[in-house]
Image (cartoon, rainbow, N blue to C red; front, side, top):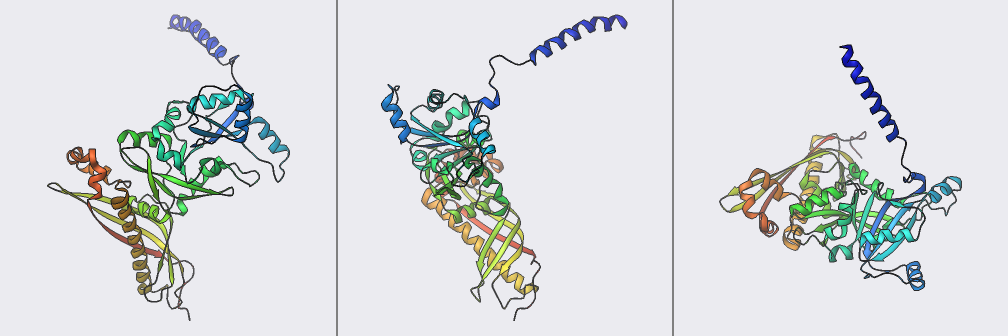
Length: 404
């Protein structure tokens, strides 16, 4: 036994020395404080910035077509240090640099000719694609380099902008970083049904490979302010944007999928015409495919539990079951309206399934799905969809009683 330990000891010492040497670093490494951290990226149809134009006029340039303008948002060592030392009212916590060309990889490498700091995308939070570009190019063409690039994390968020995407990476608020702001808004899904579950690079790549149509959150920008405002419809065959769903239509999709984390439903009391507001505490939905021969239909059963958070009905006694039932029915009617409106938009105008009906058919009737999946969006547009909504108010807040 002792002999065995004696044989192992020299090997252990040798491995320890090798491990120690491997931890001493690399002569060619780049320190984090010497790099520009790419945190946001916007793709737009080509439009050279004034700086680009002047640089191109002075230099000989390189062979390219002006197809796409990429705007990169960086946090640089200089910006980080100056922000901490002097946080004046006009001090920005980021810098945006634009490059125009036809190869996204070449464009980012061109930045190496304009800055002494190497660019790293390990901390990339969001990629925003302008609507004009999203209508003109397949998503995999725009995101291919990101899919292949190991620096860009699969969890990096993707958004579609109305208007130019570069505007969403701007702000007038000192100390605010636009890329972080966009990524942070997604976390507010527990407060509203108008925010989609995050659509990351990995999810988009999966959707593209599956050939299914899907939604990407739409963002708008005005004077440095941004807002999530509906969703872009991505066609499963072309992989291009075919149009938008507005905010109410996106709410309808959320109710169909049952993936909402919170929000409110505003309805009008049938008798008085006054507002009743139902706050969602939980929601769930089941999409049930019905197959009879060649006929396919769906039943959507939506349930939610919540609270009466606001009422303008002065004659209502919110402690009475009669009034609560009336409030439930009023809210249910509004949810049915939202669902019906977006089903009309999906089936008649865009003729695409972006709410997961095909996926439920694939899971529950795989043999049927195999027959129809090739032309599913067209088949979906002709499918009968029945839906039922059941809301339950289990809380009426701290206020109640008769109002006189």
